[in-house]
Image 1: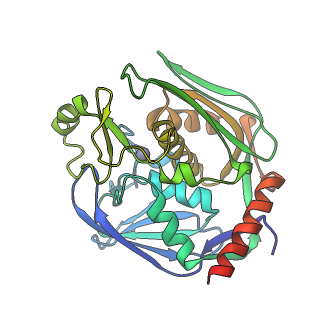
Image 2: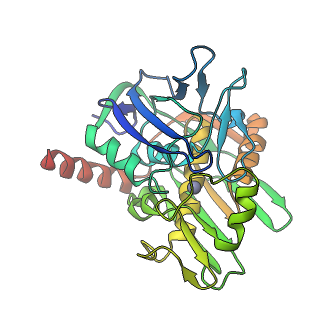
Length: 308
Ligand SMILES: [Zn+2]
């Protein structure tokens, strides 16, 4: 089997849990989908106009999560961690059924989505996979916030900087390279917030399902979660996870070098809108992720088949 074909999941996945923002329990079922289907969400609690394509053009109010909406006003929120799991695991086609308006937050990271995908395995399909190739640099500056994407051959780099006045989070910058292959720390990194922001966030009607079970809470130089951080760079790695999920809303994997300082859902979405608005910025091509990733994928396939 060659690396550059489209992929779907081998079998149905079921997960359930509360939404971070609406606090409502949702049942999520991810199903195998045919070639060129892409990723689509279906609200099974509604009986019509319930299909929403996971596309950057459908993103609305990307404030503390990524929410998508179809032409009839049907929405699904907090799709980004599941989308990042699809990105990292190489899933191109899947139907995500959900019986509420927000994807379960689970433990605040993508690890349970990834585990579920790996537990059923991946099915390679016959049609080739296409990639978005960046042809020209596109950037957005919004006050102190910045994001850009530049051409890069057969790979994706996300260079992310966060700047917080909080003494524990501070300024951190990390780079993720898709061809390096190991996404473990990125998958495991949880969403986070400052203790002093919780009242304001809740006053906006958000984070109703938030708890120390699904988010890191930082108060001054202390982490309120009993077990502390999962890795030294958990804050910035979570931002990279969000960014991967949001980039997956391009409908394809992108080849390019993304640099961002103080970026987030809104800025990534604005970049995608600007990038795709001019056809001279990009092309859609057959391709392969740079070689190192093939080797990692082959070895992880072996580990997986050995463990079955
Ligand atoms: Zn997130």
